[in-house]
Image (cartoon, rainbow, N blue to C red; front, side, top):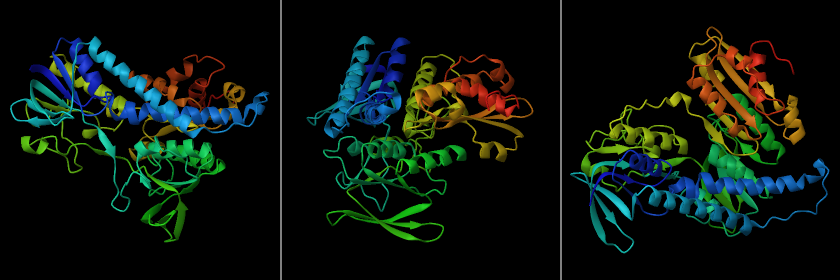
Length: 466
């Protein structure tokens, strides 16, 4: 069968691209080798948030007395937590299946490989091969857990994020290698239910090293209070898995201090690797970057006519919402529309540990390095009435403005539900809103979101509640 578009991969980039293409009148098929929704829906964004919510509830109950409520001592049902997470993911995957039917998108299950002449070979579970044709093909095959040379994932003693969501038994001790979003989220989940957690991070800044330094410093402080051990600026030299316990040999990069940490399981959270192998890219001559990512233009065309790529296989940020935006932009261009290219400087990042982290734009260090004369404001949630009432006083909102024109250069948050607040900064920056306009926009009281206005007021010397 010949289609206007075949999408290879049904993750948060692939399935929205297919739906938007169908809305625009294209005849569409989508190819998926495992589960509709891809890694994000089945093994990433959604099920991890379900686990995090279970951890949140356990913490709420432990602190019920702080709110004047008496309850018995809670117990963790680890298999119940895992089961709920898988149920949530399964329900969402069924939802994507419904959307495919609703939008008359052909779902082809199997492993897809690009062939010359706009063809795609799909191998089913039974080994049967079928050839499909399309005027356009979008590669949206996503990524997988990155394997470090000295940390080979065996799925039992050294695990990736998939195994971390489906462990049969709660480990007593866990070492997490990597302190990015994946690492700190799983650290929160396991530490909150009683696992002894140690995080080893290669970068000197420690936790969430890509975030503004103040955010990293705050999370380091909070995690230390939670009893999570953080070894920053530290490399994992070797991992010995031969005995009953695992021995992780680490070395501090600055002072050379070596330490051996014993644990039951090691979680490798060192990032993701693009799924670009064995899908026909080499045979077609599709160009890759030196990092092994697919080279694309601003509308996601590769160097091979009719072949496009979006999401984690391309050089943009490896985030679900980025993949979605790329997919929609790509198909609108294919359909003859004139979409605006994505501004990658205005992409929000969210980390769902507790407290949450959300940010967009430049860090303070980056703004200074770029030569801006800046105004910086910070408002702690300890001064927020809503945060006090909610018992969520940890964290702050930090804003960075250009002193000359009031351009909103960056916004960085750490606190309860801040991932729900960052969209204000994203929309305002998109509209080129100035600091003075944010300051004079009335924010409702009492809310967590008024901390954005208060931080702006602090930057301009007009803060009331500090």
